[in-house]
Amino acid sequence: MKRKQSNPRPYARKRVKAANATSAFTVSDVSRIARRVVRNAAETKQLVIYTSVAPVDNSVTVINLCSTTQGVTEAQVIGEKIYIEKVKLRHFMFNNNNTNASKQVRLVVFMAKEEITATTQASVTAQNLFKTAVGGLVLPINPTDDHKIKVLYDVVLKLQPTLSNFTVTNLETREYNYEVKIGRNFTYKDGNCSYGEKQTLYLAVVGYEQAGATQPVGIQTFSTMYYRDM
Image 1 (tube, rainbow, N blue to C red):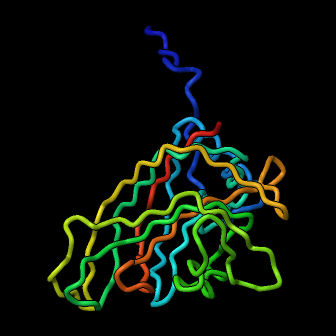
Image 2: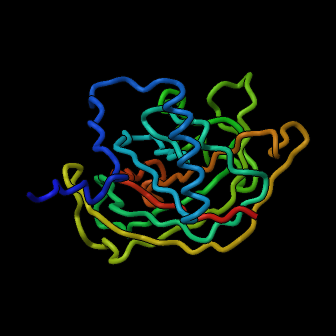
C-alpha cells in the first residue's frame, strides 16, 4: 500500500483572496501607500505622476510630484536639497486654435511650500503666474496667504516637428514626447519661509504654449520626473 504523498511545498504561502475593489481606503492604508511610494522612489530614482486633467483656456496644468487622486500627500516629503536629473513628458498634448505659428512650449519646474491642488489651481492662470521675473514669484491664489514658490528650471521647448505653416483647429490635438535633461542641484530658503527638513516640499511641472501666451499645455497622461536625494 502506497503512502500518501505529503505536500511537496508545506511552507507555500496560502493564496489570499483579493480585496474588494469597492472597499474604501483607510487612513492607515493611505499612510502605508505613501511610505511605499517614497521607498520605491528612493530605490528607482523615479516617480510617475498620473493626471487626466485637461486644462481650459487661460489656465495652467500643475502636476505635483507624488500627488495622486487618493490624496497621498505624505509621500511628498522630499528634503531640502534635491538633484533633478531630467524631466520626461510623455503624451504631451495640447489644443490650439492659432494658425501658421511655430509652436513652442514653456516648461517650468518649481518648488513650492504648499500643494497646488485642483481646487486652488482654478484661479492660477498663465498670465499672472509668470507675470514676475523668473527666480522668485508669488502664486495669486489668495493675496493674504504666503504661496511663495521657487522656480528651479525654466526653458522654452520647441516642439519637434514644429507645426509652422500648419493649421490646428481647436478640435484637434497633437501628441509629443519630450525629455529635458537638467542635472542641477537646487536648494531654496528665503526670509519668510524655510524650505528645509521640517517642511514638506512640492515639486511641480507647469507647461503652457508660448506662442499663444496664455494657451495651456494639457499633459493628459503622465510625466516622469527623475530625481536623487542629496
